[in-house]
Image 1 (cartoon, rainbow, N blue to C red):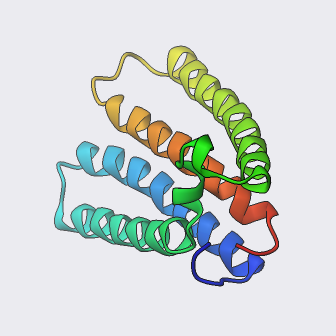
Image 2: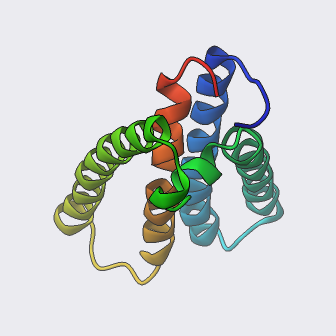
Image 3: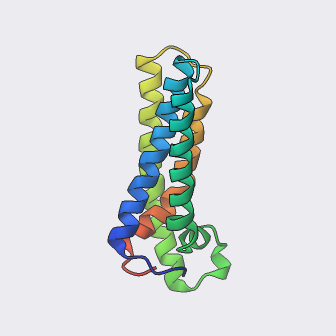
Length: 141
């Protein structure tokens, strides 16, 4: 696939990626509530930089993103099998998380016009979970 990164480094990098994306969402709401003081803008920018760097390093440069987004007809039998398994696991996780977010918003919060940022994060999650599952489970990528 792509560059050789150890399994433990991939796992740590992916955790950092998801933490930074979660921080982007949280900081967005905190910054908006505080009228975007310079501190919130800097924190949001820092989280965005970390999210982009870790996305590039652990999803794109490893080739995992390309693998899970390639047409099945262009993959060999082994690649089809591992991408199918990663998609199956990741969309199961995504479905549960998306439903939990929607339930949380419906029960504990009033209608929010800025809900789009949460759905943007969920969309990001949907696109990165398959390569995350591969990075997490495969010994060599």
